[in-house]
Length: 248
Image (cartoon, rainbow, N blue to C red; front, side, top):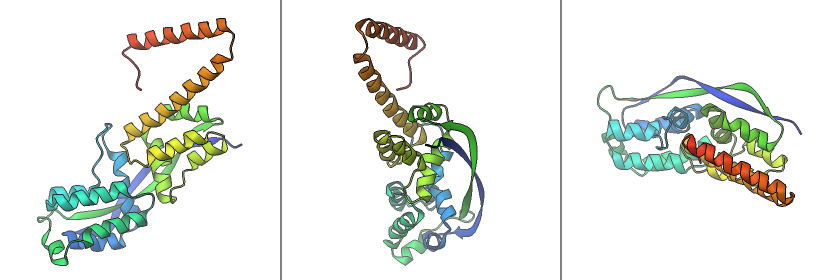
């Protein structure tokens, strides 16, 4: 079985050649926006967000709420962004559905002040090899534990968004016999969590699965070896508590 190489990503942002002064022009722009523009203003906000657990606001709902000052429509746009699965076209349809629910006159009337136009941008992805290769599932998780945010974003969010839900990372795990862990990653990533929360949950699942395997192996060991392993585990726990605890 081939090794799995972790990849980071950087995004080159460029003008998409479109701007919107009101919700009607926003609707027209979204109808013809390139996929990379939809990605830039919705999905990529997860990577640009501060390193905390607050869900980041996408650019579209942020503009409607803060500049146009239509909080109700902004809330509906935010929900459309967060609830849609992988792919630009399902997202486009959901956004247009929100704006089509408003009469055309209302969309035109809800406009931005002078200089407050929404300028559409596109983000081109440049994959960056890390040189980190995993040959076994446990090795992959150990590498992920030390990986930067863009690695997590690329493999768990960006690749499936452009690939109709397919994650090469979880496909590799299934081929390596770690189907339950792969299912857990897919389920967690589908929740549109902030990256720090996504990282904690995925690593938490892995650590719990590792604990279960260790306990199963321990049952088969001679009694004296089990006692020694227990003493080592308690000593490790005491050390972590003295150092201020460990991230769950």
